[in-house]
Image 1 (cartoon, rainbow, N blue to C red):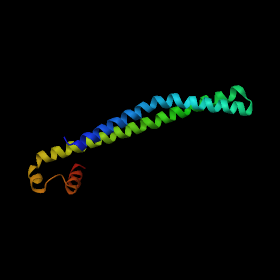
Image 2: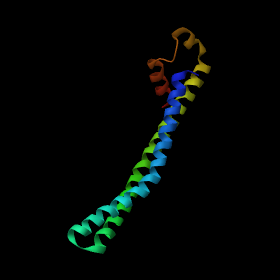
Image 3: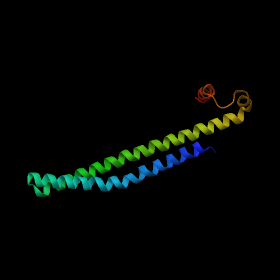
Image 4: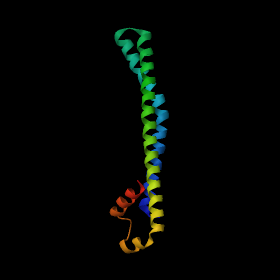
Length: 121
């Protein structure tokens, strides 16, 4: 395996773990920020329980919206990775069935990929 392939694979894994770890951070930090802003609003407007309550509610809503965006990103990355695996498997099967073309033309070129996608439709 080439070093670039290993590095890309490691980068994808680190990216997924960092996105997943941000989920917990969003659930904790957003309500804290909301309560802090609500406390400031309470001190400014002299309306003690309402600012903190509204800030807490908005913080939780914001946290869950951030979690939704993070899970959508993780899902998109997983689907992209699965698509790449399927394309590699199709390429491997095509190479096994047509070895003479790879000896003649070299590596899997763009023209061959277009031809292969047309035959699979």
